Image (cartoon, rainbow over all chains, first blue to last red; front, top):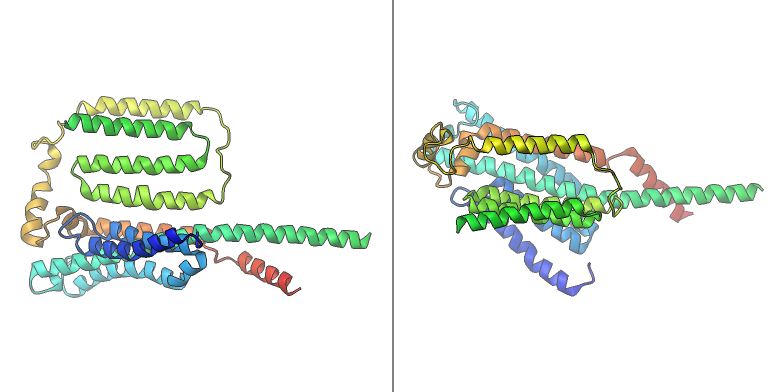
Length: 162
Length: 188
């Protein structure tokens, strides 16, 4: 699909728009529909569109595998970490009131942090799953190629021995 | 008016489900399952559950379809021929029948005196404004009142992803062996 100018141009317009919309859904979840799960999926969709249009390698280049794994873990850590922080501050696990002197401000901060953790994990997981499947295709092709090559080599050896 | 919209959407759902079942090409099935999710999302909007509709549209119609398409490149294009499985069909029909009988025992849709609206819901609706200050009650329930559940969900997503990546993520010895052997071919 890299060669089609229409798809390329539309993708280049769509990708940043999707990311911006994902951030809006992420941080506006307190006031409108949306939140971490939806925002994470939309954010991942932008990366998946990038990889489908511009190819697996360029897509992976934008979000490398190591960074991807770190993001998956970091999201869960941010969520759990917020809970541990409230415990350290003397409240129950995930009681956001402890995060600030004003309970409502504490609740806002806590919700913002855990929703961001959810968004980070979901986005990274979706991208990782897509690349795992897409990478599997090249893996299987490589496997078949190697098998065919080994077979051809074995046959060549057989005829040489004759 | 509401009845016509509901009936049309549910009829669409049934039609899409039957069409998906009758198809042999897997590509068509994946597309139909995406369409099913999109119609289901519309149904959730009609039910005023916009957050659920949003999730259904993004996950069910969007990402699931993309992942299924990615899987399609690894499997044959058509479904294997198989006979109708009698026992599962009877079980599914019996469960459906039982559920439709049970529907008559449910309180009327949207009834204010339904038990579910009088347990913890009033406290959440009032508390969301007074104690949390978040206008979207879904967010305050999800992230604050039911923060433990959402933490659990996030960990489930995390665990599932780790499992999938361990199985097909490509961090295997076999892959390095293959890459090395093909590189040798090019050198030779």
